[in-house]
Length: 249
Image (tube, rainbow, N blue to C red; front, top):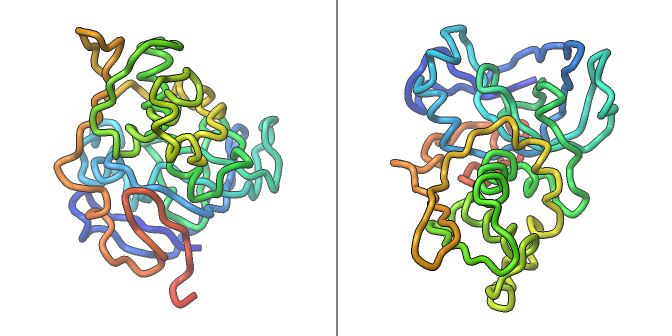
């Protein structure tokens, strides 16, 4: 199998497409055949070593956090998933490795993929979707009739927040937001609470005036897309998602 990995912390030039042998899942782990993965600023921050005191110095390290795919095998104590289940999830920052043909992660970091979403659509949910959920539901506890200002609404966190606001809580903006109301993310985001406990609130600040809550999604100093230059093996690379394809396929 193949994955994108790096041998030292640094820029995108450190990434290489190489063969690797995925580990067998331990008792509470699940091995997933990756169908799609998403690119987050968090990924290039890990690669550049911004969290190296946490991630350590063991190399090579796989790239990628969020993904969607199909369960290949499960550990002896896994009860929520079975071989063949379609799932969406993320990895521990210490291990990463979602930009691969297969990845192993703890079962707590996985949920069943909503039937209404394709693998590519589901793969963009974990970090951005959970961040938006934490901001609106866990932190702000907003409800029907309350107004929310979402700054930076064209990013992944902002789009997720808009979809949740419209479909879950109701809003006067509903009639003016047909695009988001019909978006696949609006159809089924009940999987998000299961992932919430593993991520910290990163893009919400309290607001005053007439707004109940403000979600500020700040653009990174450079896009995640720039962290994945032309690497053979990727059928597409963007801020949103890529689908895995073998070189030459």
